[in-house]
Image (cartoon, rainbow, N blue to C red; front, side, top):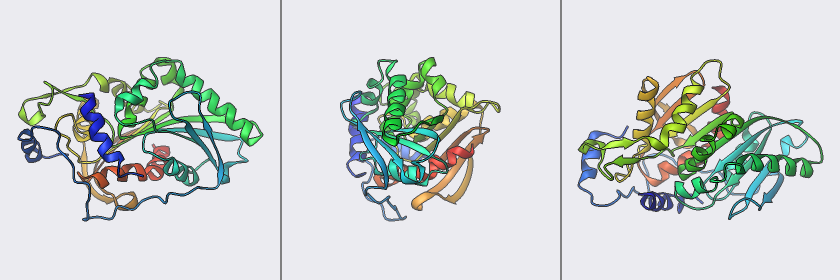
Length: 312
């Protein structure tokens, strides 16, 4: 199953540098994974410009098979207080760096892209001590590059698509969970069907085991006095052979006893919002689209969603 997820997410990654019952019933007829259209022309799909943004940029190479890209925007170089944002998956770091320049505050932005599929991201943090060591190293290297000390305020994790696997592994450990203040998932929260490949419309069930760390985070975020923040976005992409982000977020809302409210609003870069659910410091935003460009929209909207996370 994880191999199929990797193949599916790779298809989307190549273009980056609910789901109704009728759609589910159609998927039962398909023997293999449902391919989403790789072009879409009903709405604009604006993209962040791929370029170097002014600031301090460097790499950390000691932790993963590919270097972690770190960036402090020019506007924040002299700050004495920072939030740390670590983003997982999505190719080059220019989207993350752009988000740092638009952040309503001062941000150290780090980007890790190591491949396709949630398993490869999960496996980066099998060593449960790696996350704390990574945070400490980012802070120490940033101080050395900036030439002055500073105070860390918040640690924010975001994951696009397969990147959710890294965050799930990180927050599964209590020590690491305590260091994380906010989480942003961008169209990336999946699970397996039980039995394998049997969609909900055909009597299948969701294997919720891998979702439990996010259930805990959401439960903490809806506690009014909690410092945790949790924002999820999702599209209408329906893979068919594994659970869609619409289905996993529906499961999450049911578990939290929250309702989805239908709306029709514009989101960032031409995205069209269709629904939301919110309580205290937890929010879920549902957007239209079942194509590749609709999926990639969530990555390029990172700057907008990151600032929205601050308002929860």
